[in-house]
Image 1 (cartoon, rainbow, N blue to C red):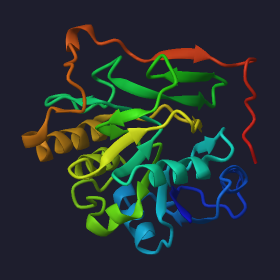
Image 2: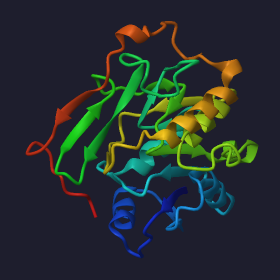
Image 3: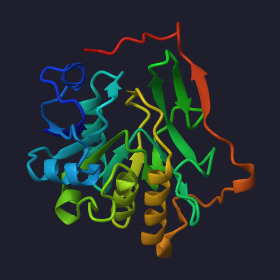
Length: 252
């Protein structure tokens, strides 16, 4: 079984998000939409709370403004974890290289950043952020937090660091750094997620980013590739306009 854990700012029974998850998953699930409407709890704390109460062998952590555009994503995850006993974390976007002095997971640029995420923004923009030019599933050192799945065994070995990351930033990258000591971290091209946000990169993000760099200073840079990126020639992700080319409707 798959457990889906979400920190919900506006928890609504039978919400569009809940319907989207249940209609697209294609596998038995339990769903925890944990009320965090006042924003008092960081995501690490909420995720630990949900994980402690979960029964699934695969735990999915995702944002409350993300929706699935892929039907049958549950069997995709089940197959990935079943095929590789050393696979610990699966995301939809991530990086193969993290710098010692730059906390952004996209800083290395192409070809080190991998995956794709669709963005459907309130201003009407509808586009795909293509971190890598081709659809490919591959190993990474850390994945983006909009969606990631974790083998239950990892949560019995360590949890999210809610003391250090007590807000909404860098909990997933910290978890991946923990996981990659003994497990593989990958991204899959077989699950497409639509995100209704571009993220926030404010002073709080910078502060928690520095905490991340400080915590992992002895293990950064982190890499799962032999190549080393050149920060001066970093190639950013590409954007592909989707309006009028792809159904914008959320499956629900």
